[in-house]
Image (tube, rainbow over all chains, first blue to last red; front, top):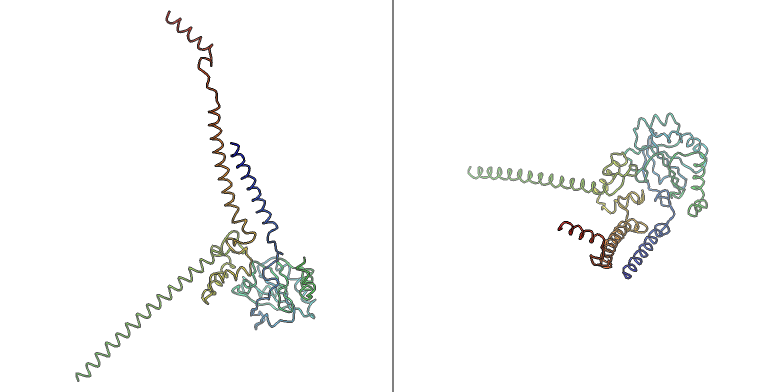
Length: 186
Length: 172
């Protein structure tokens, strides 16, 4: 009887220790910096985009300039809400080495064209009819925006509605390598 | 004249043989093409079941009817057609959407907790129940062994006296 209770105590003790170890490992184990996308910090996948204004654009042709890559759809409410901020920021950064590029996805072309007419968008916009570029960039919804630095590296990904301030913040980071380094320390 | 007739007959035989072999080739080619298509369909389904739809609640890419899931299935098919392996295709999606896209977490890093915890809970639960049963059984037998076996007469002499008295009364 005495041996049995000693075995019980030992197994309970071992069980608790194991459980604590598992939880400690889950919390502190191989904790890594959480990135908004696995693509952040990597070279932006190249693509060829059919522009609404006609012609094609290759992302790699924009090397040397920071790129704001905005995925949108005409049926998306937050896309409509962020449109004025995008338009205003595009005008603000017009003379700087920054390219604003809109990619219309999961949409109807005629609706997309009506949307561009209604909500401005003087910047470049193109159509991704098969969602291939969206999947290539790991897009799960709209609006989602990628910020690419002049070397072609993805610096940030922002999910949700942009404001002028968030655009400024991320574009400054894309344009300044020293500010990009702050990301990893954040 | 006979030689000419023979030649025509041979030509006819050759022609029918040619048609027959062409037909056989066409049938076998269409059969093999359909079996390739079937096998690609199957592989698309298999890979789609392993990936979670990023915009759905608990649905795999195979189960979902969302536009994104449709696009993902088309991309899987395209990649299979150019000869990419299942592992390469899964890695492609993980590289873009992260490990959360996987239906089952890979057994590495902190994910070990997810894999080990159910087995550990099952083991601990089984051990606990086993110990409880063993302990309650041994307690019962201990209790039975420890119980004093007193003679019947000592249990309740008053009651026995009463019975004896009633028996006597009955006999008399």
